[in-house]
Image (cartoon, rainbow, N blue to C red):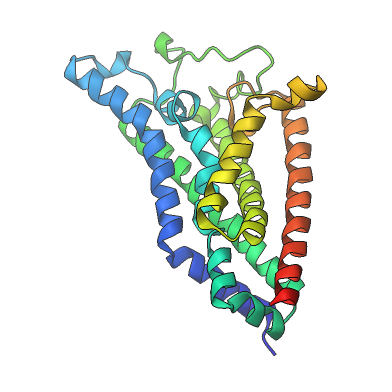
Length: 271
């Protein structure tokens, strides 16, 4: 008898050791550094005093607000471990694991692992990036340095948070928001992988769906406005948008997991 805990541990080890997860982490980090590092080097070249440069808070979040992090998140989430589902099907490992336990146990272990891998890869890149700039740049202090002021909208929950403990509440919320969003897109990628059995489509289709959502395609067909898919780590986050976004993502997660389970069961029965 194989305990589920042992299977989960082995799958997590497999995910952590896989180059795909590290590639996902590196891509996330590079997209964040693309803004902050370029800005910092530019200020050094022109000899700007550190007191007049952006704060550590602004540099930590600049790659999200003005870089490509938002658009690459679904790609990196899928890349972290979801593509291993294609390997499992091609090698026959999925059917073997299902025979040792059950399809449900296999789905549970695989889904949790993929979601954790994506969340860790994306969120840890953001945390590391924020730590680096808080060690290099001045901590946010709009009272002493007026150029540190960030003009969030009046309804944005970050408006009164970013001056508390050098922006710690914002860092925590954005880390959780990134981890949650990445984990759901990993589940979407997993559901796609079991039906299309193609690694390239596994990492590109979630990005395509994300782009359609962010382009507000639903509005043009139904007239219903939706929040941004990046709402949970966006500078326009309000309490209302947070609630709508969480509910939307939970619905997507449930649909993805059901679709993934049906796809796995069908694959095992047809094998």
